Image 1 (cartoon, rainbow, N blue to C red):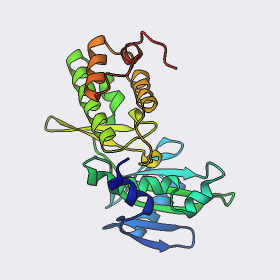
Image 2: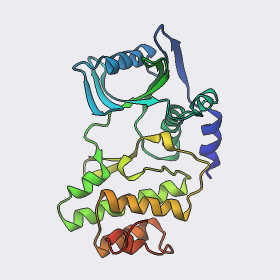
Image 3: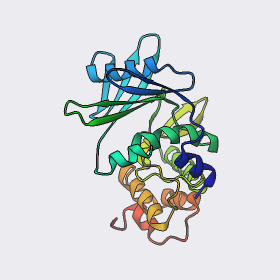
Length: 257
């Protein structure tokens, strides 16, 4: 466990923001951002206007004149303990908000938080939202690997990702659904790997064998079976050569459980 991350994460320290209540919602905006901007994003998301491009049923890209593009995500009430988590400021949107502020301090790239909103659905159930900056030119890591087109390009991407994965583990960062939520950007021939969808972050969780195996299964699922050389590169770059079954899992010779 990384105490440098866990202590401010669970105590909610070091996330300066401006809070404001409106008749239809309560918002908080990150430093340098206006609460009015966060509310405008909420109204656009709910209005489904031309400025909104749906990514899936809970996420959208929103473009506002003179403000730019933003990523906007909805967090509905999902389980019986949601209200308790929200009271303790540990709901999914709270975890994502804090992680977006804290991970850059550990040298981990993630889109900057813009703000959060708390409103109510038609059935009066509370619904939370998170807005972050939009990453221009970013694409999901599995898509980048599939589009590499040649063995050398695939191998380079897999090695870079495995090294980042090892660094995240060493910094005490574990996300349950990791692989599909890593975005890749390229600038002047250098790639940056961005962690997104941070609501599943729990710094108190140790990186165990079972959790590493879960990530390896995700690589095999989203990227597809790897060659023996690619699988060896991933395993060695992650520094997890002592785990049995990884080579067969990644190359498709073993059945994932």
